[in-house]
Amino acid sequence: GQQLNQSPQSMFIQEGEDVSMNCTSSSIFNTWLWYKQDPGEGPVLLIALYKAGELTSNGRLTAQFGITRKDSFLNISASIPSDVGIYFCAGPGGATNKLIFGTGTLLAVQP
Amino acid sequence: GAVVSQHPSWVICKSGTSVKIECRSLDFQATTMFWYRQFPKQSLMLMATSNEGSKATYEQGVEKDKFLINHASLTLSTLTVTSAHPEDSSFYICSVTNYNEQFFGPGTRLTVL
Image 1 (cartoon, each protein chain N blue to C red):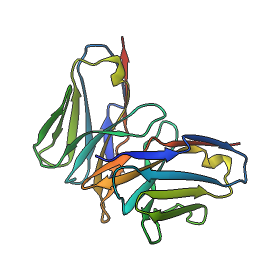
Image 2 (cartoon, rainbow over the protein chains, first blue to last red):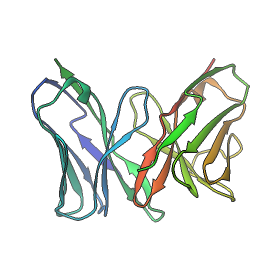
Image 3 (spheres, each protein chain N blue to C red):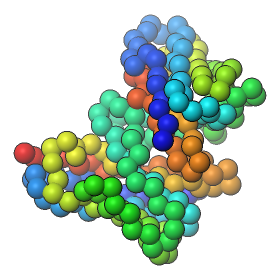
Image 4 (tube, helix red, strand yellow):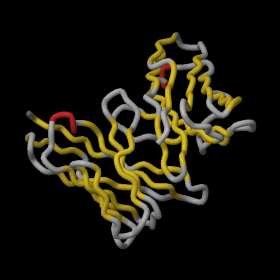
């Protein structure tokens, strides 16, 4: 079935650094969603992408929908300690269009 | 977006008992809600799709007799874990769909002793 692979699996950075993570698939997606999950909480939607090549920002976050429709990346600029969490990409896939989640990227930010 | 709540936020129960988890859509009428399970250090896995006024559809490998879903109104879906066992200990999260986006509840941590 469709899978979404995220890299890196984890990142440990200093406050103020920029971060980049990506999500790849072996098949085409028509929508890419990026979520952040804090420990013990449900995922929160950060950015939604609907068109190939689309570049969308939400504050310090920027995400792009790859032109092949098989990948997407998320950038975080000037990281702060509250950026800590797990970042998931997701997209509706398969015959039923159910949401498929990526493997996640754990981000740790040292003050 | 949509605001989703879950109750309880955490529960500890003895093996063999049943636990009910509620998912409420607070500002949106949801004909469809989703239930996910997340084990530590893993991603979210879809368990079932809850359909208002009709039977839920379950993902492959999820026992429908063990995880009972009721979606009696447009704002409430419940998941009952029947005869819970320690291996059912997990983080259960529900979501609602608004257009092409899904919005998640805060999750319920279930621990079965």
